[in-house]
Image 1 (cartoon, one colour):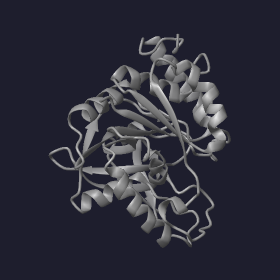
Image 2: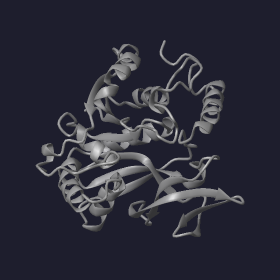
Image 3: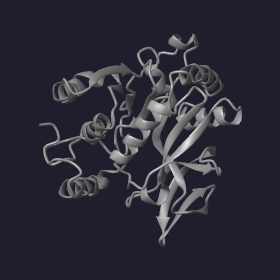
Length: 299
């Protein structure tokens, strides 16, 4: 059974200023998602599922359905604010979506095979997709999950601080903890994160989660249980978010699952700020020049 690719594409991209998920970065208007799907098909994935807001459906269908026809199975699921689907009758006011782990739950009724989940606006590279496909095909179990661990120094923006899930990894290659650092940046050639007004150093090679996770469908049950707890305990915090690293941390600490850190030397790049766009375009142009991708991705 070929693994499935879930793509987190429901965000509003407030810092970017427009829908960066469908913005063009390649020479023929290719989105970053196009390159991820191209790499996923090459690596052996059999289906792609877009997690979007329902109002995005027409735009996404127009961009992706025809070009992917006959290449990979495509489906869409919608992230929304309906809590009754989780058995929560109480109305809870929100200022923003519930976060990535809540978004992942949108796929729980249609994803029946091992899957990985990624961000729509992040460029991961073929090496990551190939290693994840191999893991999901041969090694994944309900108690052995994974992430692709990028070197933090290869994941930063030149135009502002970023959030990163900083991983602690043991001698066996499994993660022992994931610490969400919400303000990470370069300073004087070093990598630091800021917390409570103080700066702390990080190793350039420290693995971080760029939301490239490998799971079996068993993860949906525990995620739904934990989301209900989270929603009810954070009902007075309209900006609180339920992140995938929170689920990983729970599973690691209660001994339910290990998370293998799959290392890659790929340079991750993405778009957090509008100023990132020309940098991403130049990076893609360089990859095309080096033969990693054809100039016209979908011939």
